[in-house]
Length: 220
View 1 (cartoon, rainbow, N blue to C red):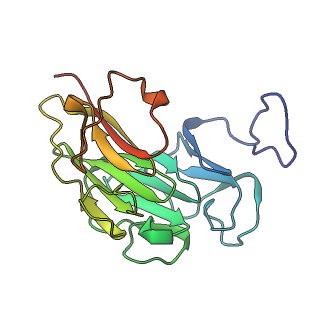
View 2 (view 1 turned 180 degrees about the vertical axis):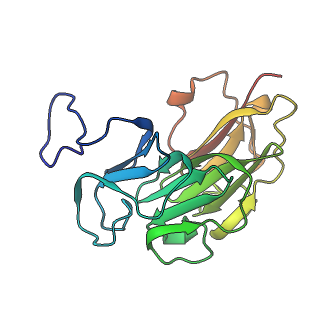
């Protein structure tokens, strides 16, 4: 909870945060981007997902060292990523299946650049994989791919970003990318990038289950 310890049945204020811009929570940690474009994280840290090298639980928000110019922060189950003003992405924490996108499977206590991305406009993380919306109406994903969630037609884990194949959001672009453990659907025609057709019937975004990588195009 970021209060120094202990559970609470009621909402409680996170210690030391008053200028939050963007908040996200993983399985058992949370991160927030601040008005000064830095990032603070707290919670479980066994995989360095809070950006602290000790590996110990972080009970109150702590600055992630070395991060500046952050415009968005997202958390996975045990990893975290920050989108920078430059369009680059830095990730840290558990690197199982290459979910940090740095070309390795080595977990990192400090932010590492995602290989080959300098034009990202939005990021989102699943439990074991990550995705980014790129300039030119493209999506790139990386990490675990056992359920085709990277969208390249294979089930091979990808340690660096791979552009999702067969995805064209059209002139309207799209409103967001939210990856989960699974394949990627697009709302226009409800086409799955693994070629399976799944009618969404305008199901609310929050009701789509936890086995998908979703890209919702905006209306043209």
